[in-house]
Length: 237
Image (cartoon, rainbow, N blue to C red; front, side, top):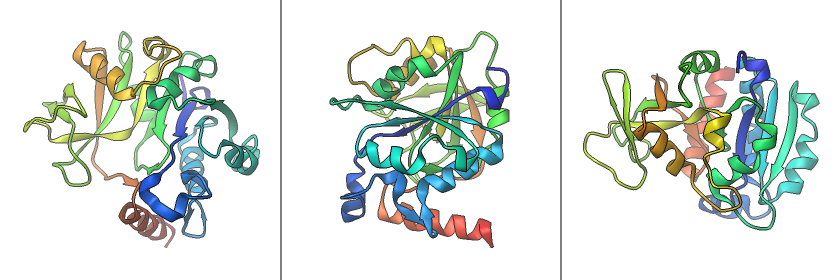
């Protein structure tokens, strides 16, 4: 993982997006309209600007629609490949593990419903020689969602989505970087949550943090969709 052009970004886009109600009854979340374009157009433009060239779409629900719309990604200036959940939903961890043949030496992992204001090259540079991963974190103070990270003096000390404590001031920002050896730790063939892998890596000191100071935007809820659209329109103004 020497540069952005050769490091794939896995986009987790297999969920059903039930919180968006009728909006996603007939289309996947990645194709939800945002400022006149499908949401995935904005994610792809962001990645292209960062220097990313290789994308792996981890798909499940409405996978055919995503394949039909995105195709090989050439019109977005990207090389897009696909990893499908198959008949059984695999969760975020299982989806990443299933994509292992497309990972190479390692990969970024990006939530399929987020727009981020982060420097991917700096995240890549933050990976220690002997480390297995980098988690981007944001000082959240339970503002946008429940904080789940203990971050102190520039160090990632604890991560848990299930066991919140008062010293959790930060939240995972929506982008992580994993070496292949980290992905291989996810049990193959069974559903799992990436949070389990991340918690273990943080606990063993094999995952470091990179703090981001600009908030994230997500389209997982009607409120989030509205705020994300406002963000995109401000950037374009």
